[in-house]
Length: 257
Length: 350
Ligand SMILES: Nc1ncnc2c1ncn2[C@@H]1O[C@H](COP(=O)(O)OP(=O)(O)OP(=O)(O)O)[C@@H](O)[C@H]1O
Ligand SMILES: [Mg+2]
Image 1 (cartoon, rainbow over the protein chains, first blue to last red):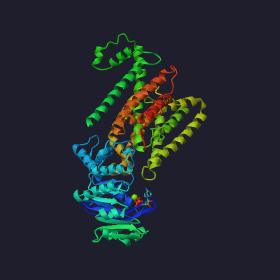
Image 2: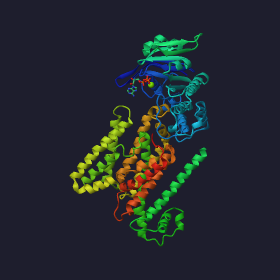
Image 3: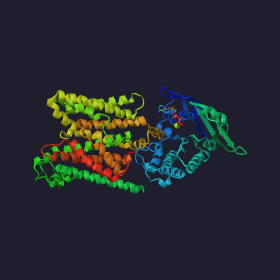
Image 4: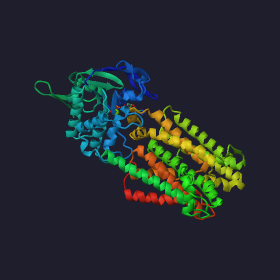
């Protein structure tokens, strides 16, 4: 399976946000999308799962334009965790996670053994089992975020889009979630496309980094080739120092203050 | 766990059904002419196939039977249909709009219907078409015109934005109300009739109206139930709902269409009966959770019970004068609802 974006353009009214994005997302790979606030990262993700309709260009999954798929079909291929999530009514965590199975369940039908299996696996992987019967509105920001990630996992899709999934989490849960997501790409053949603001997390986890600037791809490649002083300076207008350990496997990016 | 949950709901449905039948039976006994429970039950049972052979109706006068069968039962059925219809429409409106103040009238359907009715009353036609008064037809037409106006205003920007929908509903409502005020001033002799119509009443219930309403409410119920999972998912916001495979625009369009039709037909036949479509959904949500798969049928049943009780009170409390049912629903509904809010202290909406 592959995901190909060709010359994507999108604008909100007169404000053009994506100005010709082309890219190719390989199988079983972790992609980090980085770039300054407002450069169009969230907008790109919303185009990728079909919420926003690009004004030109196309998005192909297995050579099939996602525009031509039904909503349910698309939802079996791509799942999404939003940057900020609404929780309307007092659903339990388990109810929320079960909603991820929607694309597989017919109207009037109830969940199969298989659906329930996916739900429990997702809860296990995100350690949300402990509070599965609590109301979603009674969770902390981080617990909520894990529940929403669990919902995307329950959806069992090849491509998983995450918009700043760990911004609310403590270092333990940040690592736990990032490790879970990483293992999905490494061991379960999922392709992860994850918007991150923390350049060091991108460095640690991503196989490839896509650096965006002003609705365009500034550069794409291995983290060590993209996250350079020069690129960061040109996109973020910030001077950084990159600390390296002796053999150059590990880097840490800190701003100069 | 699962089966225990199912049993819990099963018990709720059974209890509500029994309550509905009991309330309807008692309602049939009460009124200007008191009829004993024994007589009422005898008449009911004598209408049921198979059982009717066993029932003797000898010592029941034909007047009693006429009062029950042609006066009270149509009203009771109408109350059930309107109560169920407005309650399930309310549940769905609140679910789509995620707004605790949403009720079946939020899009201005009631004001459109009122304007239609007021016009018919002011221009004084008593014409009857196919068993409905011109007032009902005109009200239904008014409701539909407003529905389409509001929908197309909200759709103007391309996407159906729910806040625009609500606000254009409010704007159209105010506009219709101004027209109604002008009509009231212009045709003073009809003021009372117009005002009474807008307060709602089940007096005009009859077999034909029930035959028109029944299929709309029944099919509406099935359709809304078919979309209950979608409504649950819509509560996580349009953006997320699309990612889970919901065709948000299409689903909202269908749901709004069905609920508007239910509301329009209810208002056209019975005037503006307020409050039931607002509090029944909230009360049921407080008592049995947010899942629309159960919220819709439980609300429909409870709404039916509630409106039969209210209509009976409207008939008997100041008999032979009738109190407008809209006054009763709020008078008795509000304290009950406040009690529930205090008792549960749980947030219905965030
Ligand atoms: N619904 C909208 N209507 C109009 N403009 C929007 C809308 N959503 C985003 N924008 C604008 O589009 C641009 C890109 O927004 P987007 O959310 O994609 O940025 P982002 O890269 O995700 O930023 P951040 O890092 O702050 O999340 C911004 O200038 C923003 O103001
Ligand atoms: Mg963003």
